[in-house]
Length: 104
Image 1: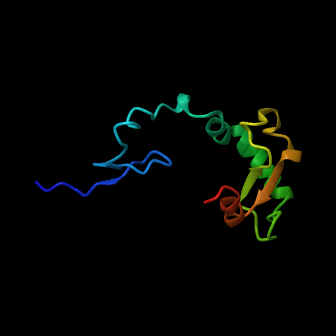
Image 2: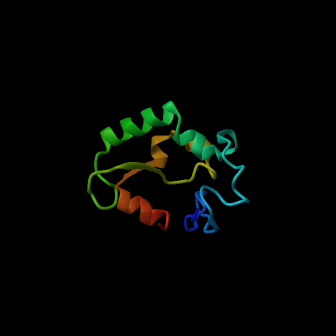
């Protein structure tokens, strides 16, 4: 039976080729409780509510004035976890501006 061509590891940022899914190094790293705090924060009900309210009050991108799609932390939550829900540390961005901010 023919095998399928190798694909990139599904782990974010990993460029290794694998026969499917994740490479040997990242295969066991799916436990959600081991994710960084920012992943847990961004999937919390509190963040969903905060982000939705913030975008309702700030519907345009703070940089290009197109419709905002995301809420960005000015100071990262790794650097300032105390400001994770502080509106003074947030800005509404469109997807393009958010990707530029993160070098994508």
